[in-house]
Amino acid sequence: MNRREMLYSTGLGMLSGTVAQAARVSAQAGTTPTPQKLQLADYEPKSMLQVKETHVARSRFPVIDVHTHISGAAVSKNGVELSSERQYFGTPEELLAVMERKNIRSMVNLTGGFGDGLAETVKKYDRAHPDRFYTFTEPSYPQFLDPNYPKLQAQAIEQAHRDGARGLKILKTLGLYLRSNITSGTLVKIDDPRFDPMWDTCGQLNMPVAIHVSDPIAFFSPTDRFNERYEELSNHPDWSFHGGDFPSNAELLEARNRVFARHPKTRFIVLHVGNFAENLGNVSENLDRFSNITVDIAARIGELGRQPRASWAFFDKHQDRILFGTDATPHGDEFPQQVFNDKLYEIYYRFLETEDEYFDYAPANVPPQGRWRIYGIGLPESILRKVYYENAARELHVSV
Ligand SMILES: [Zn+2]
Image (cartoon, rainbow, N blue to C red):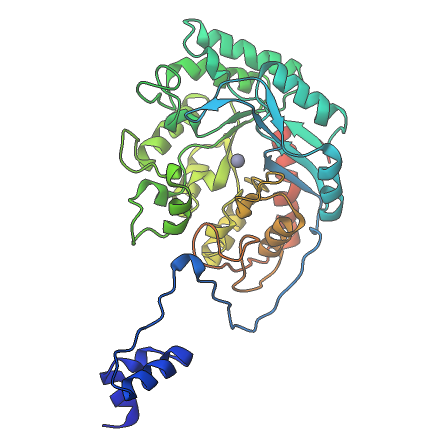
């Protein structure tokens, strides 16, 4: 038996560096080695790959970020926004400074709320800085129990349009949080007919509907050692939709698709890569099936960038239907994959513009959505132009 075989037969070959040395010393001394235990949360491996690192400080073309959260509801309960009152996450001035540096022409603030809060948000951002900010409205769920809700909701959309809203945002509240008694009872289905007048009104007023239903597929699986987003779900246990009375991911997407089919004149921006970035085949099929939908890429470059060849083909095939979005939230430091800062945009630009390999998809020491890294897809200028602003300008009815 040579030295190497001996080490393996005693298990010491599994160890390395100082731990192995310590083990050898204690083995010689006749005591049992104590391997160092490292908590998963403390593990921050540094890649030893020596590969090209391109710093993309500005995007090749001006950007319309169709998916940001500059404001939010002041009051919500069990995942349902209950007040029109808004809280603001960043001032126009501090946002504009980053926008100038990063070549961001416009930010779409999806969570503008409804009623007075919406009007106030439009005034503070859109009207004060024309074409730099566009605000979307949201459903008035507090009115949901009114027998006239379908009509009232359609009228609220008309009022929001008059107040300057450019579109409607549907959060995953619909399908996963909104219940028959608003915050209690059984879950309301995405294709509940009470929303039909709302979808139709958006179509009539040329207001796109930015819709987020479901969530990463791993959020519907048990939070156990097989879950690829175990750490993320451990940090945010309330993000798990496994068990309870939650529908499956497939049921949510089917209900959503019935809405697309029933309202062909309404345009939908299906957020987070069609809410199924793990299955680009499925998203591609839906894009072929429904001519009234587009997708954004917000908070999903972690998914797109770990399947760079499939992503390249997806961008090539659907280049007229993919919009740039980040999910950026000013001061959202708790969620590095969507914190509004220079670094976040540089990562998106690097993913889209370069062929760099194996880099972080979020500005964080530990990849926040799952422990993997991504690869750039190096899109040609013709596609970059469409994704950065042309497709968004068309859907938002603005000229750049
Ligand atoms: Zn979002």
